[in-house]
Every structure is written in C-alpha cells, then in structure tokens.
Length: 303
Image 1 (cartoon, rainbow, N blue to C red):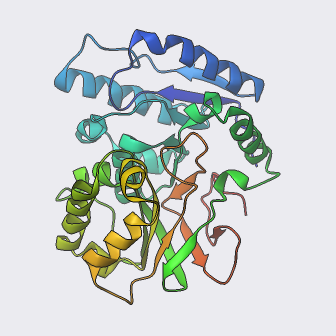
Image 2 (cartoon, rainbow, N blue to C red):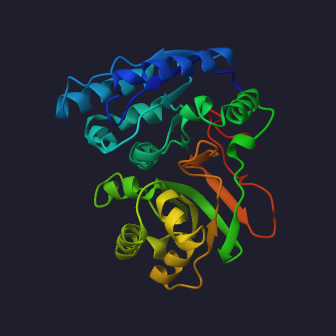
C-alpha cells in the first residue's frame, strides 16, 4: 500500500467550537506519530459564518484538499446536522478525477453516499477521532496496521444473521437519519445490487420505526440485496440489543430479505470501519469478516 505522507483534516458538518482545539492538536500528534503529516482545513472553525457562506467555505476547502496531489486522504472530524448543505457547492467531477479516501461518520453519511452516487468513488465510514477516544490504543493499532498493509482488522466487524444466510453487493448507507436527508435528491445512492448499512446514535423506538417506514415507502428494502444493521445506541439502551432487527422485520414483512446485525460498527469509540461504495460479501456460514471482492485504485481496502 502506498504510504500516506499527508492527510487533510476537514470539518464538513457543524462548525467546531474553539474548545475542540486541544482535541485537534492531540489527533494531529497521533497522526504524526503514525508518519502522516496532518494538513488542517482553513474552514474548520468558522463559527462567525452562517448559512450559504459557511457551506460554500467548507465546500471550497474540501475541494482544495481533494485536488492537492500531496494529500492522500481526507479525515473529517465533525458531526451534527449541516453536512448535506454543502452538497450543491461541490464539483463531483473533481472527486472522480482525483480519487482519494474520505473518512467520516454520522452526519458525514450524507457526503460519503453523495460522493459515491455522483462520482463513483469509495469512502470510509469511520471517525478518526477514535484514535484519541476511550479505546485509542486498540484503534491506533488497527489503523497503523491498516496503513502498513499488515492487517485488515480496521475493516473487520463481526455480525450475525437474523434472516437469510448471505448478502452480496455494493455497500451504501451509514447513519439512518443522515442518509434520509438525501431522500428525493440526486445524491441518494443507487439501491439496486446494494447492501444497505444502517445505524443510529439517537432515537427511541418510534423515531427509528418512522425511519424504517420512510425507507419502506421509498421502496429501498425491495431494491437492496440485504441489510446490515449496526448499533442503535439510544434505542438499544431502552429496548435491548435485539430491538432494531426485530423492529425492521416487523416493518419490512419480507422473509426473503437477508438481514444481519453487527455490534461492532456505530457511534461507539471502539467501532470498526466500513467502506462505502465497495462490493462486499457477508456469509452466515463463516464466523469471519467482510470479504472484499473489489477495491479502488487508491487502495482504501486491503485484500
């Protein structure tokens, strides 16, 4: 794998408060220790800007990172609600012409799926803030091994099938609330021949049910090859770990739709990474990991 000498650090969702500066510095120190020189976006702390000006500034900063030939990957460190607001200001041909992995999670679900849909390039559903989180030692070890091409543990969640025995297709999705912000827009990912991943931090039973119902009304469940559920933090804390898959089966009412559940991808600081826009195979017969049947030219996924 080509060594990443420089990585861009961006904020594509809510502006970061000044109080995040120490965390930014800590993350930069970790990346530097791994041999990566962090390059900070000039639109990370723009709390003075609002509306279109802020979104355009974020989009322009991201475009510069993507075009920069010295930057091999882009890490988003934000979250919240605003990421979809920058989509109209992006030139998706730039992503296609300069393919490089974008790492982000939660609200960045909107950006990652839009980039796949409009540019055909893959991204990574993962928060690099995990490198300075509660499980930092484990995350750093996984990340470093991935960079060196020695291990795919970063991309190795485990799962159990609750319906069906296998799912094959291109992985799409992420945070369910943020994915649904793309509904009815040109940025919603193609569902045909896809594996749909869904997770959520907030939301009790009624809210999650409403999200599942909306996807049902959009005919998403009739188009995808299967569903992989991640963690639903608030929902599971109240109703139990089995609640999301039970609710989904009640909503979908389709015994032929393969459904699997992983406890190792979501908003937890111990979360594994998933590739958006990459073909995957999940099999019930194997108590192993995601088997990648395709990878991009810039090697975001080890074979």
